[in-house]
Length: 163
Ligand code: DQA
Image 1 (tube, rainbow, N blue to C red):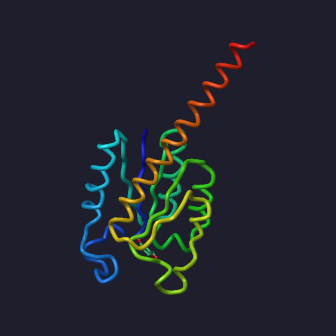
Image 2 (spheres, protein in one colour; image 1 turned 60 degrees about the vertical axis):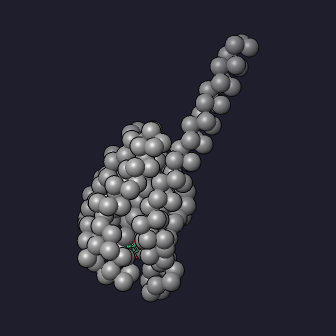
Image 3 (spheres, rainbow, N blue to C red; image 1 turned 90 degrees about the vertical axis):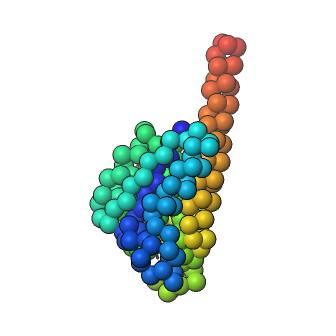
């Protein structure tokens, strides 16, 4: 099973960027932490960060037929990007949206997520732990999807046997 973690604009600046909101932890440290969770669960993991909307759309499209789950922090594009929302909807891969800060406690323009409605769920406000929780959630969802597929395959095999 494979998870792709997609990070939006300015998240490469974590550690120095508005530390009062986002804390002192760097993006690489967050990635190292969730890589550990992936390893413990035998899950392959890839990381991608971009400040460009189109590159995020491209990376989402590349997940089609390749990834089993996605964790995305679209950052500011959460609140503006119909293109990223449409890409998530198009690829039909379970996706968990994460935010370090609690976007509902902040400015009103951050209260609306255009992307959350096409995700399995959203985790917001737990700092780096949002990614840890996102990882646990996506692994659980991928396991559920895999066992559903196995059950369906077994049912079809049974039907075929019965002629
Ligand atoms: C963020 C919240 C967004 O509103 C903001 O634009 C970000 C980071 C978060 O992780 O808390 O860049 O996605």
